[in-house]
Amino acid sequence: MTSAPSTYHQRVAQEKRALIVQAATELFLELGYDRASLARIADSAGVSKATLFKQFPTKAALFDAIVVDSWAEKDVADVPPAGDLTAGLTVLGRRYATLVSQPEMADLFRIVIAELPRFPELGKAHFSQGKLPYFESVRLYLLAEHDAGAADIADPEMAATQFLGMISNYLFWPGLLLPDWTVTPARASEVVEEAVRTMVARYGTEDAQGH
Image (tube, rainbow, N blue to C red):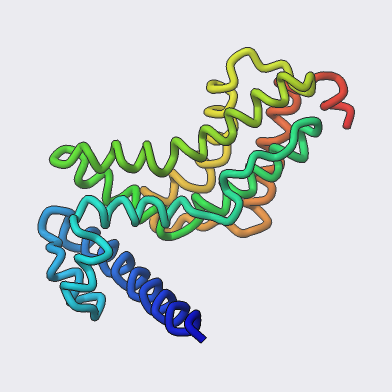
């Protein structure tokens, strides 16, 4: 009997948090990070200032939440088991393609790029709490494949950069400059598959390439 109110209040709190994060993202884009006050964000989200401050005591904390939410995906931090380079890279590549194809991701980058000269801490937060954890999961996976003998990778950091770059350079970056840039799901799958093939051809051992 005591768990029902707790579950209800938790759900309401999550719903209000989502409204606040969405309102903040829209106002940061419209007005800029500096001019979008917490009071205005609360009003736009339809919540009280007290509710907003309870969840996000500072604007920096609210921006951090936007970063975490933009990069969040179920099992995103799980590193595939080593032993099948093609399968593991395909899992990681599809996850990354899904992440960078979100409209929220483009919005986040636009906020950071626009405000970076005056608020360099936004770029640092985006990198350390968003991109770096995902990049690290790919690097660790490639290192595990190297240790398992399925890949010959002397520099996992460089290899991870190459793999993610092949995907984002087609699926993400053009969209920041070209409003009409669209990529179909089928084309996105092709981009990931080609990136995987390129990585396996470059780094895979004979067993990996013949799999």
